[in-house]
Length: 431
Image (cartoon, rainbow, N blue to C red; front, top):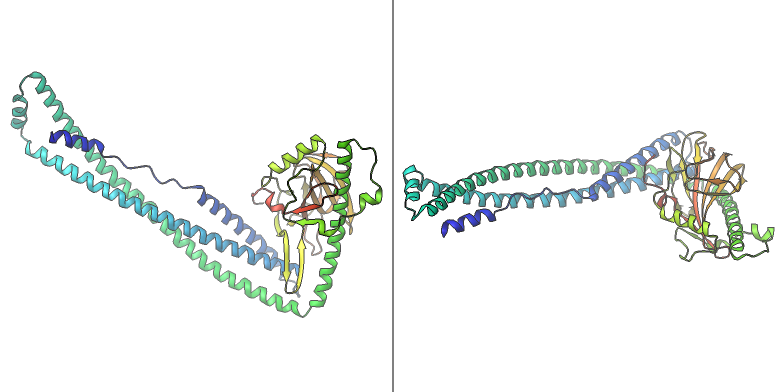
């Protein structure tokens, strides 16, 4: 009975469990860190060029602010990765402790088995055990029992060896995680120093700009005036397009008057960043399909240039009491870089403003806008597919080849528009 119980206990012992599988968190954090580092590198290159200028410009101030934001994101990323490694270390330490407890059980069971084998170690004892059987069948059963006991001792020894190997393997992983954590902590310390240097440079730039506030106010006023002309032109085009779509859908004959088509919507009806209500405007079926396809590609749209970095993000920028809003992103690219459509659609318009071209491509009730174009490769009404060249990028006022890219959404001809953050729609791939 005792022997049977011992065999059952041996069979109940389990082997080492599978290794901890790394989740998506680490991959996401490492990918995010690489993207941020590449953006910081591009920003630093631009700052190196801007530092050659004798006076601080708004563009330099904008890039300095971007650098601070990027370094803040990097520090947050490093802290999150350190916290993730801390959790991983705790899991491996708990796992190693469990393996050690299991190893102790295996050793105890193996010791009992060896002791039992030692007591019945002589061939005479074994033969006596077999010969004391009542009949031949009982002798066979006793022989099989002895064979099972020997096999179980061998299996127990193998389990001990395997558990030892697993513990050493887990210790290697644990030490690698701790070394990775130390490296990240060193990076954090280095980034902290870089952050302080960036803050100091930004503070110095602010002091330099403080004495030229009137000059800056005039520059910002000019930028706002230019931006308003662009916004009004975009809204007029969108309103005209949506009105024609509605009339085509409902079968109206009356066409909008020219003045009505070009009249911009009041600025208060334009939203920034937050999308309009989900109700779809009246459009032909093919435009509804196109809009749905555009929506499903959120976060997956290709970049409008093959190579480039974001030099100005979407949203509000402020410097003391000077504020301005960026409706899109400025993408610094190569000289005469080719600009490509980000999705299938129809060219709504090619407009010249302030000596540069602006191209609008319609995707249902979504519109992608490509500004600061020196040469157009498409005409109004032309069908385009994703990746089709639409123009060549021009230099901005600082002399750098820069594409201004925007995404607008219409709720209908008389229901206002929404300006969306393009970086939430473009793919995360780094250029």
